[in-house]
Length: 256
Ligand SMILES: C[S@@+](CC[C@H](N)C(=O)[O-])C[C@H]1O[C@@H](n2cnc3c(N)ncnc32)[C@H](O)[C@@H]1O
Image 1 (cartoon, rainbow, N blue to C red):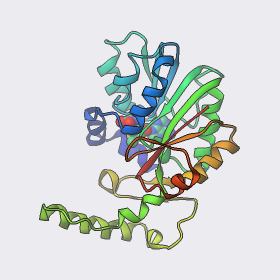
Image 2: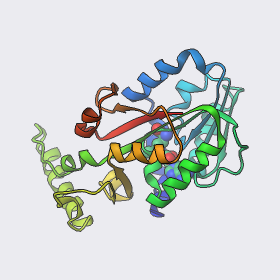
Image 3: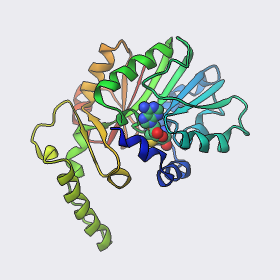
């Protein structure tokens, strides 16, 4: 997974995230849910990237800290925001070691757009424990993660009116199959899997996780009141059956 950091340091990828400014549907749902409480919250935005979520959250919260392990992303955020918002700061830090923050420091921790999937499965559990340490007892943690139920779609050919797009898609599928050495064609994909899904010109590896298994891990780590939201429509999924069948590319989780 080490090559992910190089990818998130590269000029092309940094520019990609710096230019991206839409809120995803589940993020909008969660922002609406928390809106009335945000003005009293001290927020930590992990894997802040080019500051997509800063634009929406920094004006609403009491204090906002954005961190990223790519110093290039931090540079972009400092240039974009520090002049405009006096309650905002950006620090280079890695989610696997949050010792630069105190215990019980934050009311709200966000790790958006599958940033948690950039680290190994073992380190993911370290990250959940680190986040729990810096969260206040009644604090909230929100993140998203790729969904194993969406893996079959990575290999599906979708006919597109643009012939060049369709041909590129076929070549991408062949490369995804080759690069993952047959792992994706298995009938039963286990609870989690590390794969190269072609993102950023095949220069990343991400953890995909079964949403019910993710919820189990959160419970085991001591998180409670776990809610999950589909990427497709941003709606909360309340029934276990609904979560099990959900095929959206990734799922958002909100817990305390
Ligand atoms: C998919 S990008 C999302 C960026 C931004 N949150 C957004 O939604 O546009 C994931 C971000 O997480 C950061 N990241 C990945 N692993 C990290 C880690 N271990 N610690 C801190 N940041 C990390 C990457 O550098 C990258 O900026």
